[in-house]
Image 1 (cartoon, rainbow, N blue to C red):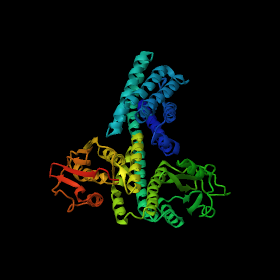
Image 2: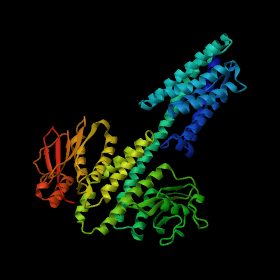
Image 3: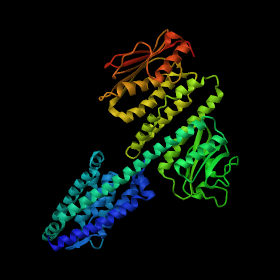
Length: 558
C-alpha cells in the first residue's frame, strides 16, 4: 500500500469520525429528534432533513483530502444515508444540495462536474433502496451495499466524464477502493447510530406506557370515589412521585383543586385558575402545550414553572377540568411526556365519568358494575399501548387510528349506559377491541361480519366478552390463528346474535352454568335475569372444531 493510499485512508477516517460525532450530538437535540424520529414527518420536516443531510455532505467535501486535483471525501455518507433514512424527497434533496455545491466550489478541479453529478445520483441510490432498507433485518448491511453501489457509480462517472482520461483513471486507481470501502462502513455506522437512538426512544416510550398503567392502577381506585379536592390531591401526589415531573395539578371548572410540587405556594387549591393556557384548554377541549413561561402565562410574578402539558378531563362530552404536568426548565416537554399526560387523561376521564354514573344511577348493583369493569384486562391495555408505540415512528397514522379505537373501547367499557344500548353501539365497542387485536396479531385473526338484523336494543357489554373469549381462548392458541364471525338476524319473535370462531374449541354443555370465566357467566346471568331462563347464553363447542355462542333478545323489550 502506497503512502498516498495511507494518507487517503487516514483522511477519510478523520472525516468520517467527525461526521459521526456531529450526527450523534445533533441526534440528541430536540428539533432533530422531533423531525427524524417523530410520530409524523411533514413537508417542512422533510425540507429540514434534506438541508441537514445536504450540509453534512458539504462538510464531507470540505473535510476531504486533496488528491491529484480532486478530493477524496466522505460526502456520499450523508447523501446515501439521507435517502435510506428519510426517503426519496430527503435523499434526492440532500444529493442535489451537496452535488451542486461540489460542482460550484472553487476547489472543484477537473472532476467537479462528474463528482457533482455522482453525488446527486448517490441520493437517488439511497432513495431507491429506502423500501428495501425499511424491510431489512440488518439495515446496516443495506446501507453498506447501497454505498458500494453509489461510490462505484461515482468512480465510473469520473472515468467516463472527467478529462483528461489518463488523469481520471489514475485518480480512480488511488481513491476508488478506499472511498468505496470506508464510506460504505461510514454509512453502516451511521445506520447503527440511528438504530440505537431509535430503539432507545422506543424503549423509553414503552417505559412511559408501563408507567401510565402503574399510575392508573394506583389512582383509579381513588378517583372512583369521586372528583374532589381530596381525591385529586392524592392522585396528583402519586403522579408527582411516579412521573418525576416538577409539579402536577388538577382543576375542576375554573378552580384549582390540587397542586403538588413547584409553584404550590401560589397555585393554591380553591383559588381561581392562574394561567391563560389552562383556560384555553378548558374552552377548546384540546390539549395545550407550553415550552416557555410566556406560553404558560401564569399571572404570578416569579412563578418557577417554565413548561407544561395540559390535557382536558371529560365527563361525557363535557370538559369538567384539566390535568397538568409541569417542568421548571424551558423546552423540556417531550413527545413521551405528552403521551403520558394524554393516556392518563383518557383513563381518568373514563373513571370520572364512571363515578358520576354511579352517583346518578344508584339502582345499579355495585357487584354487577365491578364485574363489567373487570372485563378490562390490564394486560390487554398494556399490550395495546405497546402496539401503538411500535407504530408511532413507522406508521403514525395507524398509531393514531389505534389510539382512537382504544379510547372508544375504554370509554364504552367504563361509562356505557348500564341499562340498555343499541346493537350498533355494542358492535362499535366490539370493533374497537378487534381493531387493536388485529393490529397486534395481523393475519392470525380474520374477522367477518354477517349482519341482517334491525338496530335493536340490548344490555351493554354483552357481545364484547364473548368476542374476547373467542379471540383469546379460541383463535390465538392456534399457531395458524383462525376466523371470527359475528352474525345478527331479526325475525318475528326476536333477534339473534351469533359469535362463532374456528378455534381450538372445548367440551361444554349447552349452558355456561358450570363454565369458566366471569365474563361468560356474567353475560348468561344478566340475560336470564332480564329476559327469563329461556334467553340465557347458549354455547356449543367441540375440541378442534371451534365454538359458537348465541345470544337471543326477545322483540318488544327495552
